[in-house]
Image 1 (cartoon, rainbow, N blue to C red):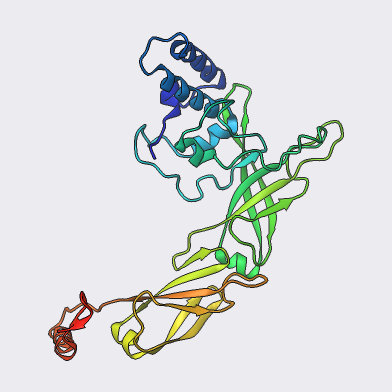
Image 2 (image 1 turned 45 degrees about the vertical axis):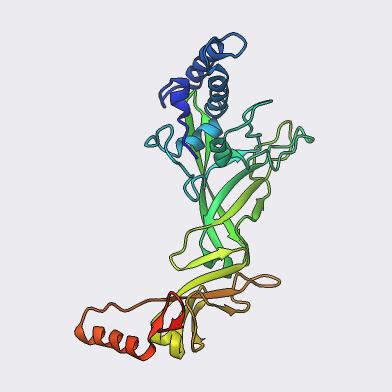
Length: 312
């Protein structure tokens, strides 16, 4: 996927006001409209302009896009960093590029899943529901936690510039919550009108990267390094888990990649997930003569070809 510099497409600086963005779009849209333009790639340029304008005209999309920073250039290979949009508070407005337009892969990677979830259009006096992604630690899902979170809501100032309005909330993280689940905070969304109740705030949960554990649903995975003799002869190893260290029995003749299942030691739930320990062989370096002789002795003892898995 290639990065798109929406400011470059519209020919405006990152400091442009919303009025600047609108004027630039109107000027270029007239120039490249397929019905009147003689430029060979007018239709492609017109679609790019529409997508760029759909992002930069909207304070929410623009603030999220600006989070990427200015170091990216058009055409560079790009993947959104994990948790890039964490802490941004969005209203329930649709994030589509516009009627009849097909968004690019780049647009969908950033905004594709924000399609107005949580709106209450049928209750006009009711405040709009908002949503945001928040990052928590894996330990929070195991034991539950009380966390103070900061959210940033994109708004326009009096000069037409996009600014971020920050607020802090105390949130109870329930034990057993999974990535992708939503917490509903009643009355923490947009204000109501005409005496109507405020909307709700939906927090989408994601996990901070962990140096040891990976998460898949309620299951948790751990890569456990083993010395060759531990895998071959079997061993009792102290293995970390999110709830503390356990003594793990390694069966003899365990191959690299073997998974040992610790039932019920994944994320709590009904039923709870499992913890899978994935065995990884680590070869000691042959840096001394005694270590090299040990490897030569192994070669003489086994005469094993690892490529054919046969002796000799």
